[in-house]
Image (cartoon, rainbow, N blue to C red; front, side, top):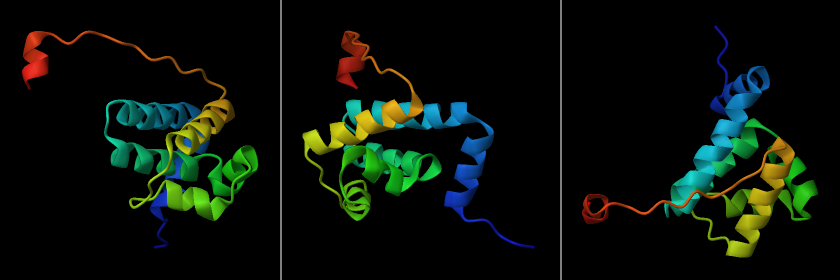
Length: 112
């Protein structure tokens, strides 16, 4: 029985259900905005692998695909400028808009 790599399986799932790609991007952005930078970068990497791929992202950003892979790796340390450029390219590729929702935490939530 042939096996399928995780990356290929995710790409196939997103090809079959494009909403999944948008949900992956949303999860990555929510992680980044909530301060979970390592998680957000890795989720963004998974999104890129499952959708456009790093060659397309490189074409959209004007950066080398290997540098983008390194930037979104577990040991990556992108500048805010580079990270937001990647995010913008992903948002444009998906044809979605992004808006932040700010909500004041209750006292109980702040204590946790």
